[in-house]
Image 1 (spheres, rainbow, N blue to C red):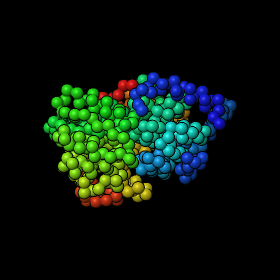
Image 2 (tube, helix red, strand yellow; image 1 turned 90 degrees about the vertical axis):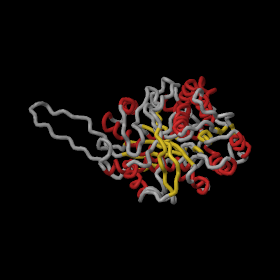
Image 3 (cartoon, helix red, strand yellow; image 1 turned 180 degrees about the horizontal axis):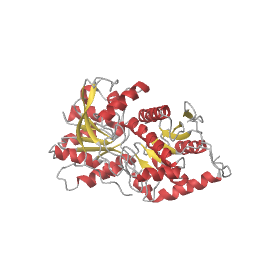
Image 4 (cartoon, rainbow, N blue to C red; image 1 turned 45 degrees about the vertical axis):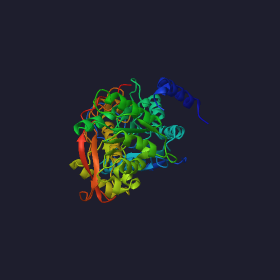
Length: 430
């Protein structure tokens, strides 16, 4: 049974997001990554004739950082990457002496891609005394997590979760770290289409919050661009969906590129059918880890055709250095941008703790006041007052045949080629 405090917090959450409702559509065990050793502190003895004074001893309790991501449901592959990126950062920071001399501890909770489960998991994290929470993937979970973060004044960091319904202009404890808001993600698609001189594209979206948000972004950004997108195909979510009529409609309209970013669950079917019905045209994914995409899509239809976006620059030196350490640490076979985000979240929180201490409000203020150049990232991390990415410049890449650079891909004989990097995206204003 929820406490009265819990009920009052939920009333705050519901009040914050009621006006936004039209815009979008576990076990009890807590897993922790423990600090390997406790930090020690020494206090110099005073040599003075004045009466001795006592000082508050520096705490040696670990700094707890929460992870809230899907570990057993729809977005499990994303969540496992986030988790292992966060775990790697905890280990490396602890090996180097911790944050301000204090060890880090990662407290892990499964959001189960369910708002109610995520709310319960959030409460457990708060009870455990976390100073920040990171890793949220699902747009279905994000508004709940954001509302609780604002009510409890504990910073939360999204990795994906692009729904705009998570933010208001008064948000101060909610931060995106990888995927921008859905209204921002059509601009990189338009930029690439213009760079390639395309005049006709097909668009297919899923009939839920992310898909509808992306649909609205396409309509807004492509207006007046000279590129015809025809009738946007709105398709149900699998497993019962037959995508044939939707892809055939785009083929009949003469699509030179298929934009499937708004339909993450249908990617594999859309890629295969577009090869059959349209031919050798690029198909855009939905910010999906490339190893995950190729686990679902026949490489024969994906290689040289499947494109996607990332907040990580998979071709950079800093990514290569981080990915080699990650693959030595994790059972995952590729370091996705979700893992890069997880590593960055812990790193930024640890820096904030070292500078301003373990008060969550002070941590949020420190994050807002600074810009961070994180390993593997394609752009600096900084934020608007309400937590939207202020300098996002996603990478647009295509999956080509391998071999990959040594030590960077254990998932198959393929690698990524950067096609373009977007211009800085205009931050979404709630």
